[in-house]
Length: 133
Image (cartoon, rainbow, N blue to C red; front, side, top):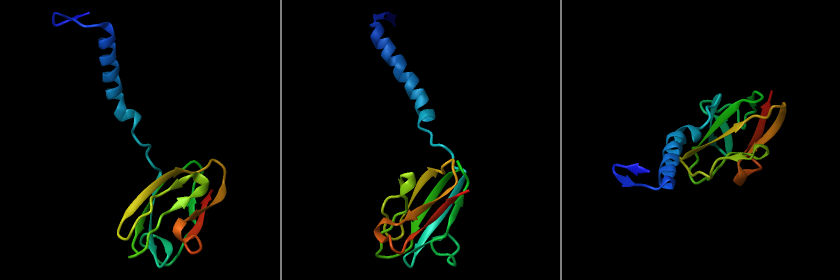
């Protein structure tokens, strides 16, 4: 094939075409799925609380079947490292220090049920339930 008066092998042209197509599709292929709901939890006195409500420690979190949920965890405890995990869903945040935050996203199962959430370093005190309705 001749491009600008120079001979270019067909394999090079094909390679460039593939790179251009993949480059154009990459933003679409890597786009994260939107979430149906976002829940922000904060840590306080070795418990989880929904942000803005410190009256209900380690709350039962109700989600709908198939709902895509983003959990944002904010650590407000100096000197403590926390995470948030739902082992049954294989979802967890990173371990975070004071004044840090991280998030995780999961899709609730299609079948109703109750699943435990935990803070791995503080299993005895920081745990609760996610109820799929």
